[in-house]
Image 1: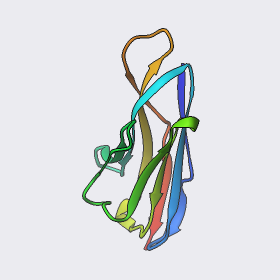
Image 2 (image 1 turned 90 degrees about the vertical axis):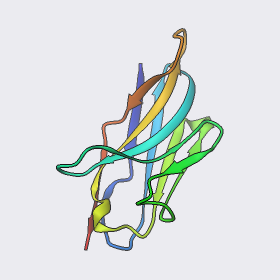
Image 3 (image 1 turned 135 degrees about the horizontal axis):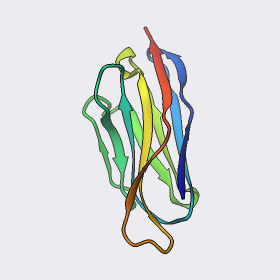
Image 4 (image 1 turned 60 degrees about the vertical axis):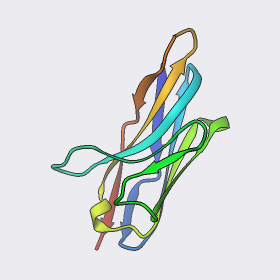
Length: 121
């Protein structure tokens, strides 16, 4: 199987920074796109940022210029550096990855369990 484990969430004041990490482990042959999503109370889950295997990135307009996504392919890990945090960034943040497992054809989406980010005003 494949597991994604997030870390780095917490409570921070507005204007502060946090760095989220998500490590994928298990029977992994290849990882394509990795990304971060978030879900605030009463709202739908939304894409925050994603990064392809080749390093191309895409960001939600609300985080452009403040958040940076990166990955370490050797460690099967994706990061989200979050700067200039705002109270509206408060949400549960989930990582996701398109993974091809050994002896299995094609890619499948896997999700982490989520990590809480709370930004106080």
